[in-house]
Length: 291
Image (tube, rainbow, N blue to C red):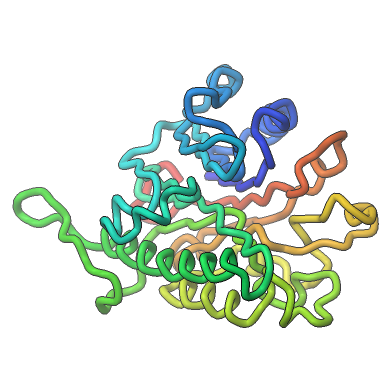
């Protein structure tokens, strides 16, 4: 199974780019972020023509996430609230979370807030959002792990309850965080730069501590590999980028990962997204057909 993630920075503006990329790279699942369109205006037909099903959660002009898949997803939900309840309703005003099951693999597609500037209200919101994300992933992991009980329902765990490592979760998207200094072309002064502060990194590490590995780093240890380049200062041509688009895997999926890479080709197109797609390929997992 091949899964890709791509912040397209407006699906309607970048529609031709996405369609052409899928024609050249017929992945099984493509997770999109920053679609910037209401659900009723999402351009589904071009993807239907390519054999993809679309699960979408969007809003006008900002944010928005979608999952395109060759096989229909099961158990699809959008936002934190279906998992965390009413305490997450305010966070769901921004459309940033969508998840679904493909076979036994839970795919979570995220558009993490940018944070704007260190210490700003948006920065504080980002840290709160990441704290909610940890709780959300923990409960999802428990649901993916726990067996069915006699009445056919799955027990609901509570955030912060002790859990074994979750099984078969793939969490991907635009995280707006460079987790290591080698993920930034020039990390000088990064402690004061949004997307690279210690608090942001610690918040993401708390999520990963639930039992996740960075798929890209399984295959590439070197720096100089980026997924986002500013439109200004000829940043792409000069490779002045950041690696902020990630695919994280639970141990069983990480073991099955046979390749992971960033495809910078679409960034070379006219009027491109400022992000490039990242993809991972998974081999078959024992007891999980269809991967």
